[in-house]
Image (cartoon, rainbow, N blue to C red; front, side):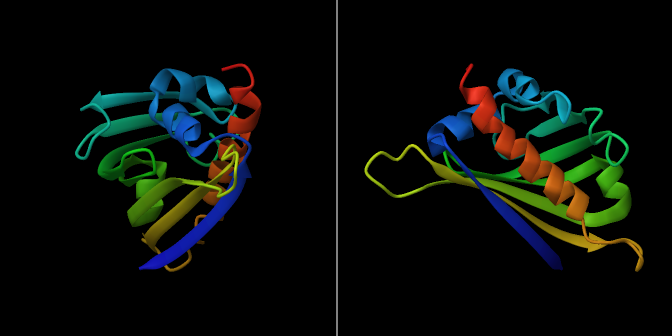
Length: 151
């Protein structure tokens, strides 16, 4: 299986970033151009839950929506899910993503590293790695900084 990852430093504590990521109402307001909505179709966000992400106009020419099954949750730290429906499922199978929020050590602990990691297998030999998905995810995570000022 192939792997790709990326990270951004956020000027907010890991706990706050985690809370923002897990809350459908908040995550849908962070950057509607990139993510216009999120909802738990089944479950409450624990393993086995299904979460639907509806992507916004900035990325909908690449991916319109993604249905994800949550596989593993480390409370306050990371969530791993497998894409089970949507545009990415037509390009890669499996396609598994982990979002992690890691505190930056220091006296004030007001920063964290937001990491995106994908494990994937292209369905066709010509399918490129999911660089657009990585760039969109990291761009979206970076917008947590701007949103948290008003949150």
